[in-house]
Structure formats: structure tokens, C-alpha cells
Length: 262
Image (cartoon, rainbow, N blue to C red; front, top):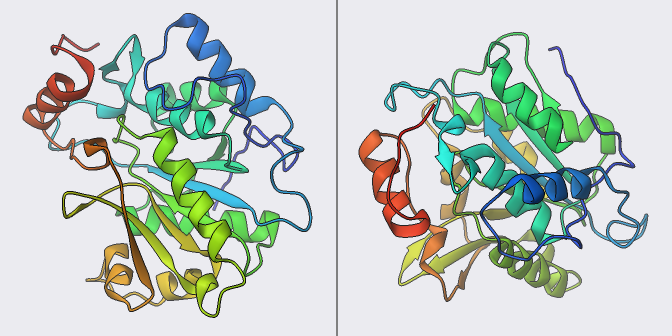
């Protein structure tokens, strides 16, 4: 597997300069997000504190959308930029890892400018689970996470990702560490009975991801007894963006009237 990275272990994300929860990027906002990802993080992830890794599976081909959906407009930027800004704005993520298709050069460029870690497999991942595993294996080799560390997962095509929800999940995870079974809990946000994104997994779930069968997705882990649902007071934790109709609906709900893409 060929891996490319634009940020080393010391180049972890910092969201202090960003407005928490913001999901729109202008030129100034984009520059701020880039600076945030490239700034050293001394306050989060010291050698003795838990670390948090965001995995962004972005190697899909947007077949149902009919055009590259991560490059579609969102606010004054693109879908992928809105997602990356949310991870940065949370200010609690030590490293954002984006798994990319080798042929999607425009997406590579946007991720490179954002300063996130890029993983580009030689053989394109056939599904989301494979992309996630590629990201996890890369983090495992480079950072050697422990049982106190966690990884968070949200789709790359989820531009309404909330920095505030990310913060709530991380805070809850930190409060559970040291409890009798707290280090085993998978944390899932929920609004009005509907679960959403992102999901926080303790690092010790990675072997279970590897052992999933071909027919099982990562959601299979959420049926386990150690899943804890957090009721969140925001509807933006859920939604899909697989088709043009999905995109238009999300734009009306979270980002204003739809407009033509590139």
C-alpha cells in the first residue's frame, strides 16, 4: 500500500482559531482551517493523555451522485472542506486521516491544502470498510495507539458534521476512562431516536473491525452491549448524500437553496 502524508505526528490539528461548530468556509475560513491543521497541538494528546484520531473514508466513486460529490459546493467551499473544517474546529482531534482514491487528484489537492494526513492505497478500496481499515492500519503503524486512545468515524460526504457534537463525544469518552467498563464503550450520538455521526470507538475495537465478515459493515459493532447512545440536542447528526436528491435536500435543510456545482 502506498501512503502519502502531509503532516507528521507533530502536525496535529488545532481548532482554537476556528469558530466551534462552523460548517461554512470562505477564503478566510479556508485559510484558518489550513492553519489549524498545521499548527502543533501541545494542549491535546500529551504522552499520558488519551488521543483521538478521525478517520475520513473518501475513496468512493460517487456512482449514484453522477459526479464527484465531495467536490460539490457547500457554503462558499466544498463538501470535503466543510467536513475537514468541522474536525479542526472541534479542537480535540489529534490527527485527521483521509483515505483517498489514487485517481482523484482534485480531492488530493484540497486535502493537501488542509494539511490532513492522506492515505492513498495502491489498490482502491472496494468499500467503506476497506477504506476505514486502511486508515486504521496507518494510524496503528505510525502512532501505536493504546487502550486509552480512540478513533472517530463519520462519512466524508457529511458536510453538516458538527464540531460541538465531536466535542461532546470526546468529553464523554474522557469521563468514562477509568470506569469499570468505560474504556470499552462505543459512543453514538442520537437525536429523536435516530442515531447519527460521528461515532467514537475505543482503539481496542480495531481487531473487531478486522474480523468483520465480507457481508458486515462497521455498523455491526453498534449492536454490541458496550454501545452507549448520547442524546444530542441537534438534528444535524443524521442524513445521507448519495444522490442528487439527497444533496438538494441537505442543502435546503442546512446550507440554503441548492446551486449548480462545478
